[in-house]
Length: 326
Image 1: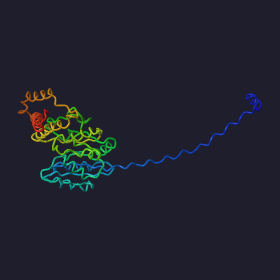
Image 2 (image 1 turned 135 degrees about the horizontal axis):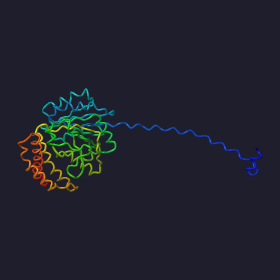
Image 3 (image 1 turned 180 degrees about the vertical axis):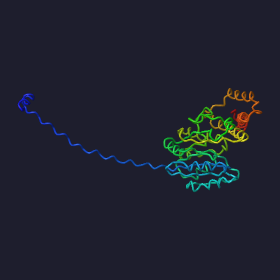
Image 4 (image 1 turned 90 degrees about the vertical axis):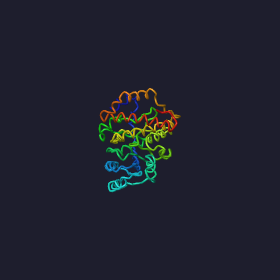
């Protein structure tokens, strides 16, 4: 057997196989440090909201966010016991702070938001309103999104809290995206939005000249123009309460419309387009053709009056701010 093997190898003895190298034990993987969750501050402006604030605080108390968080209710000159309703929830929300703005009559929603931010301690700021209801998982979804993006907006569900009249005045919009009413930049509503504190500080807070209407639009447009990304958070849902009477709907639409020329005055130089003349003609044409809605069903009357109030508000705002945005 040995001779035959030598013949196959040219008469030389076959080399012995080299011993296999000993395997080195794999180095132990170092445990990655667990990143602590940040403190999240929920800022909630409230004015004469005693009738609805409790259900919003109840919804906040039911959130499943496991990190540290606090709630700052800003009582903006209420005269109906809003502060007392908020204080009653301290056993359910141990980190609940109730702050009252100075001066009678309130200073507007943006002043209330800034007041809440100044009294907060979190590096993450999220905002909701006193007459809405945050859905389960809202806070966790907002905080997770704000790890990736410096500013965010969530989804608004408009059907569950509103009747057919309110929905006729402000028809439900797609919930799977941010708003883009003006054909310029997207934006979230102040009822469901958030930003890192550094964004709020960089912008100098919310612009307190916007007392009502476009207050949220202006802030998030400035954030984007400053290079801060805005992201949509579909899993952060807020059930959105519309106005409950036709009078309230019309007043709100007028105030919204009145703020739009102010937006245009600020952002026209950045690319915000002027209001469309064909669109204006179509809207006023619709109002003229459907004037009989004023004596018809309540939902149709609410829709007609709200659309007319918005356009009338734009006219008044154009005169006030010396720009043409109709």
